[in-house]
Length: 217
Image (cartoon, rainbow, N blue to C red; front, side):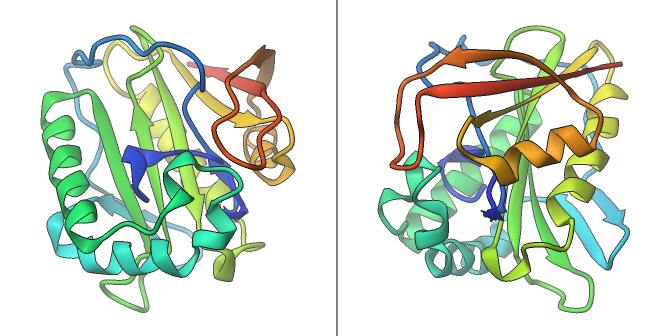
């Protein structure tokens, strides 16, 4: 992200428009369980000529290309960006993401330009890794598309979609303290900074201090 909000959406673009938002590093994750009996919309058309759509195998090649193109931009904030993923790895993660969606544990989206069908310029996710009744938003937007408010627009739409799900009363965004671009997203969306937590350093740009932003329904 050039606005990176670290978000390892499934370890492969799939939470840098300078924005990379990601999982609570250093915290042991609970075993995946269905986070809600409902499911978010598979397609969200947003202002500015962009759309969020459920990640699928049809976009594996475009996703892989987008990640490889922006590795240098993503690497400071995302552990999975240390090495370029192969197309086979991206396809495998896409398949795992589809199973997670069906199981109700994670909901992974790609963001694309309406004027360019099939395009992938970033990835967003609603992750059930922070415990019952809550979802964490992770995301990254390609540096070429930074400064356009894409991360804020998409994260805002997913905040509403998450809080509309049965049983979900809280949404969180986590990012490293040094990632100012990522922190700007929850701030603009009216999230409150709940705490600053110690976290393991897993990517070159991280400080080990993680901002935890919260919005409740």
